[in-house]
Length: 249
Image 1 (spheres, one colour):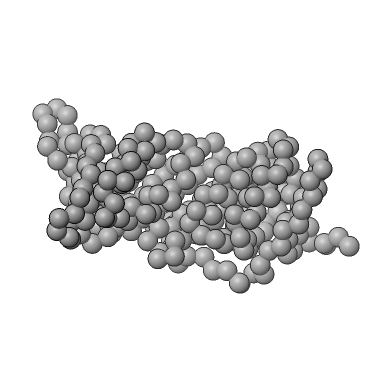
Image 2: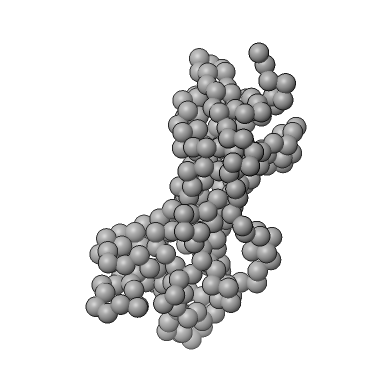
């Protein structure tokens, strides 16, 4: 018996959809995904709410729907079994179904109201005036990750500037340490140059590990007044905005 509320969602790239869902799954086991005429969007938070991800996947649809996904990783695993370049998902009132090219599945959803979104006004975040912005590519992140093996006693990452040079601006530094503790091993890396001076602003390094590096480069923006560090990334039809709350020294 068919679902009278069924809608068809055409995805031109199941690989992109899996990348979008994978970004969500790194932050939260479950997610509310909103489908509108232009895109899919979701807002998820880490367990301690120090990291929030606003994720968008540009895909047109002829309907509006809310998908309450109980286990995002489980859904990505079954989508990985599909080899077609384009797929049509059937969005029913309580499940997502697929049938094609020898693969068939039905993934059941939670009812509306079972899951809740993080209490964050994303429009307010977008309207922030940021004190500075800079690029961080995958090579820099890989160096920081390697340094974390040495500075294993801390999970704090500090961004700050030092040594203003004539005509060159300030050296932008990333340091793994804990300035609230004595005798802590540290690892410091110069990650670029900026025009503005920045006092040390620490964030939880575990949150940096959760960033899904889908394009190879992040734009990092810092708002000192609210203690917010934002990591923006865009790859094709996917836009990711990670909002990280700073820590105390």
